[in-house]
Every structure is written in C-alpha cells, then in structure tokens.
Length: 168
Image (tube, rainbow, N blue to C red):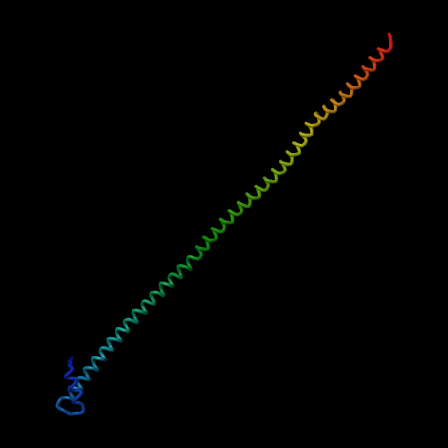
C-alpha cells in the first residue's frame, strides 16, 4: 500500500481537473487504495463488532443459563424448606402443647392448694373454738364455784349467827 505524504496530496489537489501524465492514474490508484483500506478497516471493524456481539450473546446466554439453574435449585429447595418449616412448626406446636399441659397442671395444683388452704383454715378455726371451749367451760365453772362459795359463805355466816343466837 502506498502512503501519500502531504506534498503528494497537495499536488493531487492542485492538479485536479488537469490531465497530466499519470496524475489521474495516481489519483485513481490512491482512491482505490484508500477505498480498499477503508473497506478493509470497515470489514475488520464489522468482524470485531460481530465478535464482540458474539461474546456478549454468549455471556448473556451463560448468565441466563446460570440464573435458570439457580431458579431451578431454588425451586428444588422449596420442598426441603417446606419440610423444614413444617418440622419447625410441628416442634413449636408440641412445645406449645407441653406448656399448655403444664399450665393446666399448675392451675389444677393451685386450685387443690386453695381447697387445702380453706380446709386448713376451717380446721384451725375449729381448733381455736375447741381450745376456747375448755377455757370458757373453766370460766363458767369458776363462776359457778365463786357463786357456790359465796352461797356457802353466806350460809356459814347465817348458821354462825343462828348458833350464836340460839343456846344449845
């Protein structure tokens, strides 16, 4: 390929329209070279662009394939996740059931203890009453004894005064 320097291009442009020896042929040859060079560059550019597009398509396709593969893996893992979730849910339900049972037992125990407490309070009240009765009975007997002693002392005084009045 021939290179034309700036002086050649000047001479080509100044000799335009003149038919000098070989000038038209040089100009034609130069144009052909330039057209060939530019078409070669364009072909190389197209080829490079097609290669880039091909690489981009391959990359896009591989990314799509990877995304589809991940989606399939995700879809495959859903039943496993559902099994795990179901297992966790069943475990939680069993724990809740155990806690409810324990709560019911605790409430039953509390009710039993409250009934026992009432019974014990009634027993204590009855024992206090029973303990008071002997005291009350004793107090009543002390009062009766005091009354009898008073009556006895009155009778003794009366007898003593009668004996003192009567000479026997």
